[in-house]
Image 1 (spheres, helix red, strand yellow):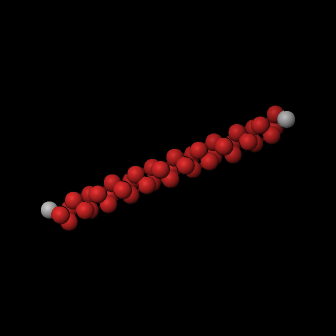
Image 2 (spheres, rainbow, N blue to C red):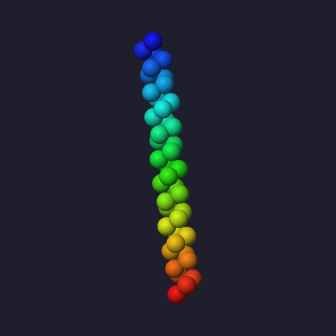
Image 3 (cartoon, rainbow, N blue to C red):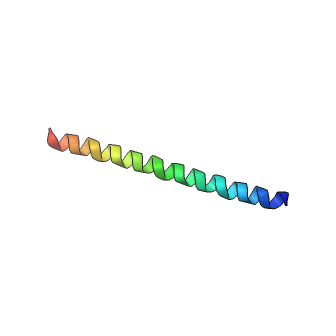
Length: 42
């Protein structure tokens, strides 16, 4: 029983970590796009 809980916990933390990485990646991309657009507008 405990073994399954550990596996579930690791899978869950893996997904959370993946989601955080995806969010961080999107934030970086949106910031870069904004900087590019500001650079083009000036």
